[in-house]
Amino acid sequence: MQIVILETPEQVANYGADQISQQITSKPTSVLGLATGSTPVALYQELISRFRAGKITFSQVTTFNLDEYLGLDAEHPQSYRYFMNENLFDQVNIDPANTHLPSGTSINPIAECDAYESKLSEAGGVDLQLLGLGQNGHIGFNEPTSSLGSRTRIKTLTPETIKANSRFFSEGEFQPTLAITMGIGTIMESNRIVLLATGAAKAGAVVDMIEGPIAARCPASILQMHPNATVILDRDAARGLKNGSFFEMIEVKNQQLLRNRLGYSD
Ligand code: GLP
Image (cartoon, rainbow, N blue to C red):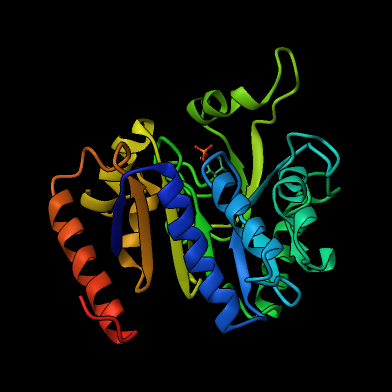
């Protein structure tokens, strides 16, 4: 795991946007795995700015999102399809036909999960998967005790996740308690993983993910087994780490190596 600790959420968004920009520039036909939630919004805004400035293009990019609420259709403002259209797809030159999310209103949701896995493998798998982190260590909607080898399936959300996400729903509005999510095994097949976490509310989950044992009680801890995972944190999210200064020292060295490779001298 590469651990990058930065000062602010803005720096986290920029660093994450750099990873995605490099990916789609070096391979214009990249398959991106995308995430929802508050954390990636600033990263998506940065990608939109770079697109408008002519620095990156999404013309040949394909995307697969991690998850979708069961029971919300694409027009529902709290559906993840709606979120992605608003926050990224409608503002860049991606072909809408190349953007994929599980359907929240399929007549047969179990078949929908299998079909999503098939579409993903037909596309050649994910080149770079972007992840956020739940306060309880979930990735996608893989809640604690999810099988670490799981595939795309229906999951029941925990009361704490429902509470954490209730801020997006108005009082009395139907809030789903079920979702379709890529499995942990599915996520782990991505060639590269970039996880963003910002804010003090994530500090406990960050410690469990990076310094805790690999355990289903913290689904994100499985990233310790991934050969190419980068975790980008702001200072608040990183504040519980015992080895924080060690990670910062390594990142300084990584940046020096990168500059030397690019021909800059310190
Ligand atoms: C939801 C999503 C996750 C996301 C998490 C954290 O539960 N299914 O993919 O990582 O929220 O969201 P936020 O970034 O808003 O804290």
